[in-house]
Image (cartoon, rainbow, N blue to C red):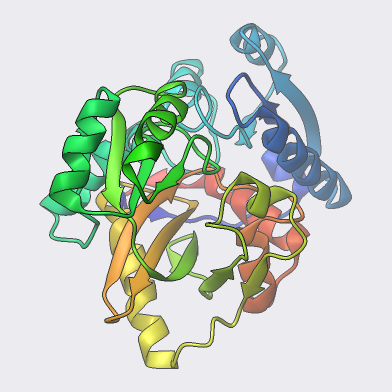
Length: 316
């Protein structure tokens, strides 16, 4: 993770005029709009001169002519979380929240993230790529069933399927391939699911996720009322600290900065398996980073303020 000197703001005027980018054109547009509105409301409540912008293909013209001093990025998915907007803001010379171009691009690409983790000696499930349903069948013979079949470059569990039998191969591959190709195939890890949020280099309390659905899918994340979020997560303090250290390593390996989230599974033998990185996590009423922040002792407005302060950071 790029070392940064984290500055604190003396007051809301230090931030100047802030653009809160939301919406965009990715498959996660609806979630981004909800996240962005929540962030905008919190910043306004703290006296920040914040302005919500529903980003479209004219966003650079809007930003360059709007007299903005910095940008709070709440764009989820492609175009906002994948390094594209970060690179554009670098050209415009506008400071922004969170990770830079490299970490954003890597974090959005599950395949490249796993390759980096594997190279760093961090635990992530083995994988195969499938460019057809027939190749998915080949992957099943190598990896065994059940499988997780997913697009490599989507968030919010969009396009993911659990495959338990050969007759599901075609539909699962088509669903994932409709989002991105080639399709990423992994063994389905049986165990407990956790997520670890990071803020300013510190790991927040882990959250254990439980859902009666097949897995923690889009519906469970944003709409279902029967998803359980356990924070404190119930692990012994020493074990939680071990997993938090792994989360920090995983985030650092992709050069993450400012804030983010790492998702992982722990199997029946207690082995942790890293799944993915989120460099612009959700900030809705169902989102995980605000939950962890509350347990750490600070509310939503304080969390949003501290994330905005990451735009004041300078490379070491």
